[in-house]
Image 1: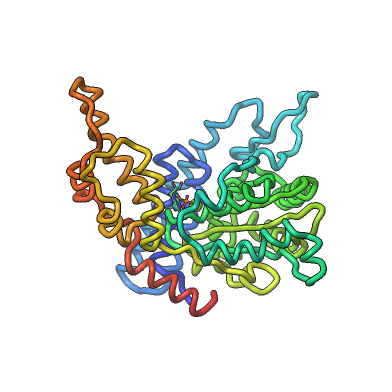
Image 2: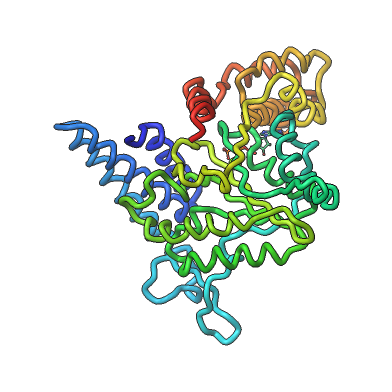
Length: 384
Ligand SMILES: Nc1ncnc2c1ncn2[C@@H]1O[C@H](COP(=O)(O)OP(=O)(O)OP(=O)(O)O)[C@@H](O)[C@H]1O
Ligand SMILES: [Mg+2]
């Protein structure tokens, strides 16, 4: 099967967005993936179209190289390792280069979000509770009934619907340490010794009383046919088996439960090998918010702000069908800025009125398209 045009678009968009944000390391990785996808797409056609696609791939590669150069500039000179582009290994107390530690590419935190902060997603929450929360919270009971937490859990679904949020909430619920791993950083060349770093990460996590390891945007780390083409693949071919091995040893057994979660909005772009039982055997769909979830979001995002009497949350909830959680939050935030700006400019302070919301809605579209939703249905039906 050749790579789809959507996969190409996905990587290109992410690459360009990362570049705009100034995150050159992530941009490089995504642009390389986009170039690789476009190279494959070129092979599936002939003639002028093929030539054009090859030129597109070449332009993306050039852009990726640019990002690599920009990324190097970000790196503090003291942390640079001779000759290795973008290497950011820290310098230890003796002034010698030490190896990159997981702390360099992992965000470690203790989230305070709980499942209550996540609107809707009742089925997903129930599944996650069964698989990850109850066995860890009730170890004796789980032992008696032979219920064990573990394996990997893959959250997939359209952007902005709460995948990252629910992963953090799992850690919040369990009062566990949360290790958020960025594939873009794992794949960046500055992380020397990538597979040792993965080993170290799991070791550090296992030493915690309870830990959740979360890899966001995992499709960038385990793309279909990881062996082929553009840069980063040498790292990938060593890192991915290491992660899979570590994952197979992941379990929820007390006293040191370690859980593994990953998220993607491009599940079809992933290597099917990682979806096999014992790995991500549990796949949880995180859909667009239904009406009750949208209402809860309005309670969270809009109700705490000063509202005029003509604002009808029920009516707004209906109008927001098809919008993602992130979209809904944006609508609420934009509506609030209208009276806010008026007040800043010296006009009388007033509440947020329905007219403000109408104005924002007229300029807003759902970010998730029906075509994207159809892809998730196909994935759910096929399982890979
Ligand atoms: N179910 C939800 N409940 C409450 N807030 C939500 C929910 N879904 C999305 N949001 C809001 O949208 C923001 C983005 O959500 P989040 O980052 O979890 O989405 P995601 O599914 O991980 O998206 P992506 O695929 O783009 O990474 C959240 O920070 C939150 O403000
Ligand atoms: Mg996310």
